[in-house]
Amino acid sequence: MNVFVLSSFIVTVLTQGLDLSKFRQHDYQFIIERADALHYDKRYMNYVKVIPFKCNRTNVALNGTFSFKINVGSELVVMVQFYRFASNEYRLFPLRFQDKFCKFFEENVTGFQRLLNCGNFVGCPLVSNITFCNFIPDESKFPPLIPSGSYRLNLHALYSNNELFVLEVYAKITRPEVK
Image 1: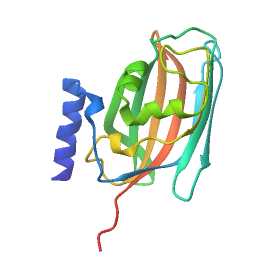
Image 2 (image 1 turned 45 degrees about the vertical axis):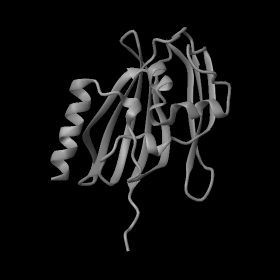
Image 3 (image 1 turned 135 degrees about the vertical axis):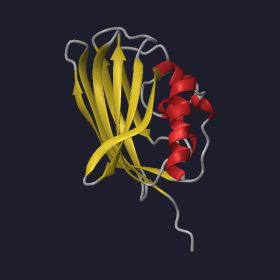
């Protein structure tokens, strides 16, 4: 039953352009395990670096630096694809978001406005060198009804149909035990 409800929800997100800023959930915890810059296109980027670190007993935060060779301004598109760990490998999970980064930022999807807390990131339009630190996503702004388990999130940054870089984030979704 849960799979059917989740599949219906995901189809709704993909086909009807659901307003992502309205996501609210307090059902599960989103815990980052590790993150890395998988690759970047040296024609468009000087470098991409993402460093995860344990900021307290339960949270992993991210520090990052992005240096663009081109002016992406407000036209950077972010595509996030989820993969779920099943049968000893990460398999495609039917949850995918794609929109301009500035729209995600303005609507505070998954807590993107927390990027302003530390570093030189000042919002949109994007500048050529961006650093952020101590970023922890806001789990209350994630979509509801995602099943518990281990996930890999691939974040693709696109500009004019060119892939600039790919970030890979491994995370767990857990729910509190009921006793």
